[in-house]
Image (tube, rainbow, N blue to C red):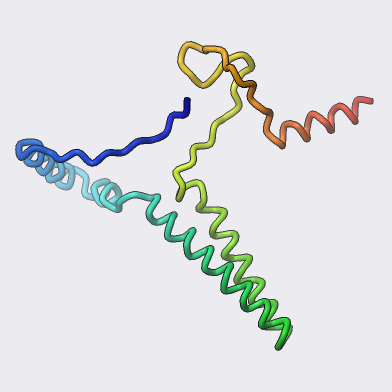
Length: 141
């Protein structure tokens, strides 16, 4: 069972809205720097925007690369750099944009669930771990 983050918009009662406004005012009065940091909004929105810009740069870069092949080498090189920059921007913001959670390695025989319940499906070792294990076996022979 996955532990997906679920969000639901629940309307607040009038009393709860007043309490929330009082808390916000008190926060701004006590620590304005922290309040401005918190007020900046959801970081996923910014990451999604960067991801979209990255995809757009990749598309523009590939189009420029085709044009560069037809017209001039410097245009092709510049277009490649634009596409590469878009790919880097997209890769760096993918996890934050999608809300993906990176799970660490889990000890054998346990799952990520409380109580250490045994998993029905064995977890596959990450690629890096498999490659390191393969290298160790070859080196030991």
